[in-house]
Image 1: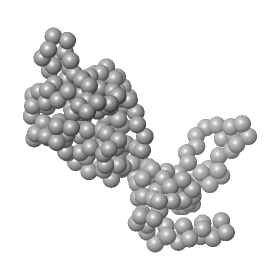
Image 2: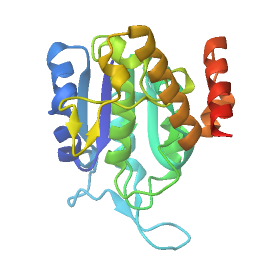
Image 3: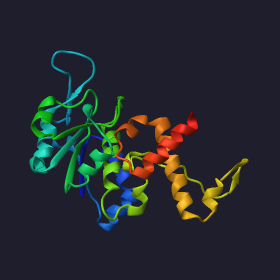
Length: 241
């Protein structure tokens, strides 16, 4: 998988690419990265990349010419192009899994009031919304998408670690504990010390169901649950009554 990021602030993206798991993945060759400062494609002496919007209004809009030139330079028409935007399709784990099957993703980082609509019409395949809020940095939104996608690529994260994460099987993740056993009077649940793997698995599933029911009941409505999981959920509901 290759990520190509078009941005006016490459230092933001470079910091992410040079850190932690992403840096190791780049070193190993599991992931490839390309950061393009599309200001370099502006042709006027001041490298101008924004202008006031037609029709008036506050803020500035990113001009189409520098972005178009940068996108053409990487043959973006043959690749899947993503523009993070509050106006886009909601992003979730299933969407991340879909994107993880691509050979290359091109991400355009917006700024100010956004980018000229003609760039979206001509080049963009996916407008993606990472949440119902507005942020000033398209780089941050792009990195959220990259982080959710690249960890699903083979060789990046241990497969066992992905199986019981939040949103896998439509449920949130169970609580985790480590040493010390007693922290400020709060102890680790005894079942986790029992060595009984079947009981530990049941406890973890129960906690996943409890947490999902408390924080994200909408997930339970559409989750496809196994019969044993359905029975456990019903028993939890009866306990609460």
